[in-house]
Length: 103
Image 1 (cartoon, rainbow, N blue to C red):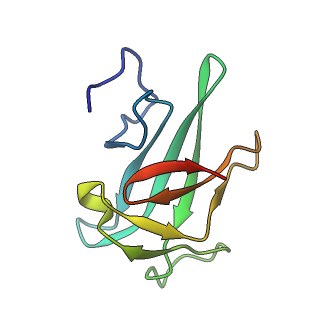
Image 2: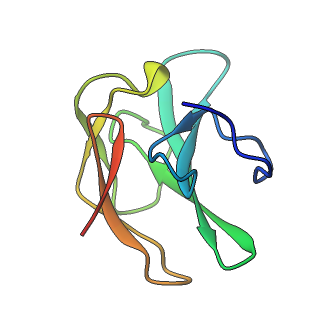
C-alpha cells in the first residue's frame, strides 16, 4: 500500500484501508512480542488514536483486552477480537486479516 501525504504522529506502521483513513502502530515492551497497538483513524482534518491492549500483556490494567485470533500484528495480517470502538468519535469496526472492516 502506498503512503499518504500526511500521517498522524507517531507514523502508522500498517495501513488497514486503501484510503489511508485507518491504520495502527504496534506497541512492544523492550522489543518483545506485541503487547498492544495504537489504532489510528482520520477524523475530519485530524487524527484520533487509541490504545488497544492485548490479553497477553500481564501488566495492562485496562479493560477490555483484545486478542489476536489469527495472523500477526507485526506483518499486518492480524485479526483481533472483539471490535474496536473510539470513545471520542464513535468510529467502530473490526481488524480482520489486517484490514479495517466497519461495524
